[in-house]
Length: 321
Ligand SMILES: [Zn+2]
Image 1 (cartoon, rainbow, N blue to C red):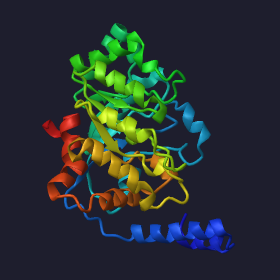
Image 2: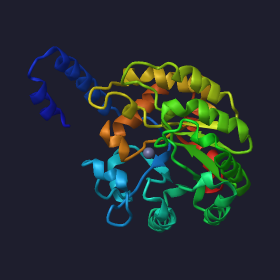
Image 3: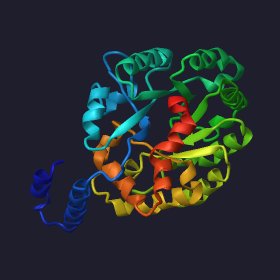
Image 4: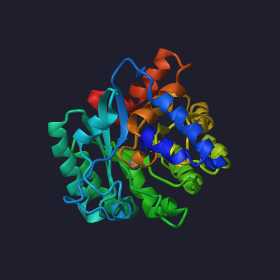
């Protein structure tokens, strides 16, 4: 929503809308900042899709997202934020097309060299049966890891079934990492999974989706600390605005959750991500990037390099790192 349109709406003057206006005024101030990070950053969580190319059933439910989102759109959306490297994360096309998605993004990367990593879908629950897929994926130098989405699984301990644990262990042998796409209710289960697979490197997406919108950070706080106690687990600083109220959030709303992430994982194991274009439900790209920069304003220069570049490069092995 642009500011002029918002002010028209907020003229109603109801109490809730007055608060809404305060948030939006803060947002306008946040947007006006100069981008303060003096090096090209790495974005660890980007999706591209073209619904006329592959089939993404979940897009049917979103007017905003149900259109092509391609590298040129991303670069335009990033605006003043200089992104040097991009990690593409699988975008939940139908399972039968998972390999086609990898081939499609590999072709995109030929034209957009900033795409330096792919996190692909793979049927880890097949256990030893997942080996041929993992072997194929590992044969593509752009593929750095796997995200077998868990957030849609009703059984909270889906990822602890023997086949899934076996398939996950095979990631370590294939030299691939595991991106955890979960709901917060699955945090204890993935903590158990990461504990059983110490040879696999895990990356938690979207800080485990705390209930920022409902103002209830427990038991996420304690569960995140338990997960972070495992040295093979890292955390993306992504999807945070989406976990808040998408219309009214301010950066102060996000700060307690972000601070807790740094407290648990330290700067060494946190990597910035946007979750573009899904993020657009809650924020333009520059506003989220500016919020993450603001939340690290008191860090040392070395700590900021870790969060916005180095941790991502070493975790995903980008650019020969
Ligand atoms: Zn995402």
